[in-house]
Image 1 (cartoon, one colour):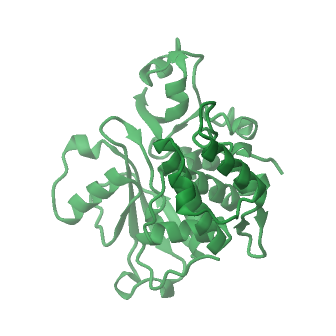
Image 2 (tube, one colour):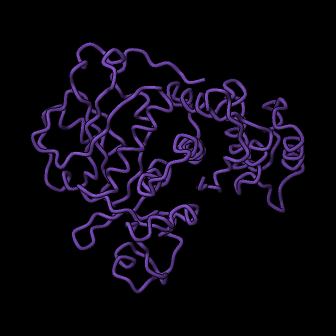
Image 3 (cartoon, helix red, strand yellow):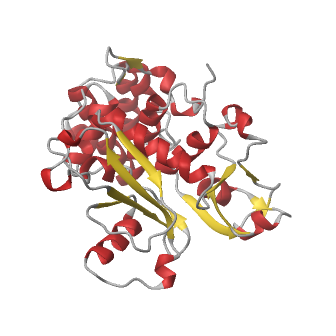
Length: 333
């Protein structure tokens, strides 16, 4: 089996009998290697002692007064978030159950922690996936993208990769705001087989033009995500255009998609500029009508994905857990 996304740390996790990711001591210790949690050279003795104790036993009780005694305010905040996440993991034991609880109970954590959980859960849900387009599309779930139109194609490149790169000679690199940097490759049939070996570099752009592999791959990932977390079978299909679509129910896949859906739901005519920010429109249908609320039993759900005015796309896959018209949402365990 070809491995991918090694940097997410999935090798440090176990699987339970249901295929969910169980937390280990090694995984918890990995968090202490995060830049925001590594004590700097001038860190106070309290912070250094707390880190040493946590390395020895990631599950030890941590009293609020221990964190309050840390001298640096940012370090105190980071430790509070880490302990809050640790405590949720201790209660629920799997990443999937923890993530579902965080979303449904609206427990606030920094986006970077939520993105890391998403990354790991998707790595599990997509295990053995042989579709490079789907794997690259899955990156949209946990990594912001910068979009641009190039020769009639809508291309998404990893925002962090773009921002960390230098200026390149290629038109695509220049349009994405790259300082000196070799050309960004667009994922294609010619290089798709290379995705696995370079998956942790996040250096491939994805073509999200309607009718091409990118949106089809994203539809596949959405269906796998729902199946993995909700155990519900769905079919997700990309649509060509928003025109003449009747919204019986909709889910915004990001904040901008939600705003567009809200406007359409309320009968507000959206202008061409707003319409042009729509990246993807999908039709979702359920395999079993029994799981759907009565009035939606024979109706499709529409999913709307849109970029911000600055052409940055920040997907919110958690909306798929709370936004679907399902009779009863059972938490994964």
